[in-house]
Amino acid sequence: MADTKIYFASDQHFGAPTPELSFPREQKFVAWLDEIKKDATALFLLGDLFDFWFEYKTVVPKGFVRVLGKLAEIRDSGIPVYFFVGNHDLWMSDYFEKELNIPVYHTTKEFIFNDKHFLIGHGDGLGPGDKGYKRMKKVFTNPFSKWLFRWLHPDLGVKLAQHLSVKNKLISGAEDVRFLGEDNEWLVQYSKRKLETKHYDYFVFGHRHLPMTIKVGENATYINLGDWIGYFTYGVFDGITFELKEYKS
Image (cartoon, rainbow, N blue to C red; front, side):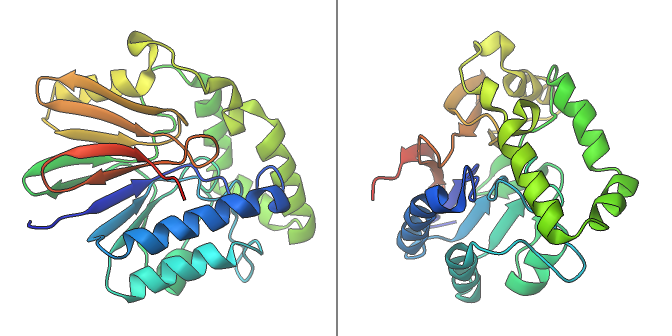
């Protein structure tokens, strides 16, 4: 695949801690999208684009117009965009697919680019550990729980969820933003275990909010994309190598 430029980004958490404080980060992200659309052959968004997202049957959270509009522009130009739900937007349904023509994935997915094998996902709930969140995720993804929440008026439901999203560390992941050491990084351990049954060249995840590039095998690399809160990092694969870069507008 000649002139390949595949871009990856994760964990923007737009809307947090408040819409007003989030707005400059949204502007920066839109500026980045404007730059990469010049040479991108694909764009992967690996979850937690929003700090909270819930799709009622006829209502979605207001805001994020510039981000959604720019994604629509990129997709309409013919550039494929792929979205993996994170733990903050795991209630996403078909809005992106119907309105933006962007496929949405709720689990990891394999891709092959230029003979390189990728395993891509948000990363939440994978590997050993993270037990508190795993229990909470079962509650959040339970159809009955979603049905109950849908009966809350959006003004109440969204306000409540936004409060929990920022305050609850199991949801926000605020206590995890530090390197735990390679032996304790559960996505590193997950990647190594996957290699026992199948080869991948790259494991690309978000969720940890820390930019990381760690060799997990002789020809295999685990990459965490960082975030757009403190690091403003993104990944780019040029058909030969994968790099983590920092966006400086």
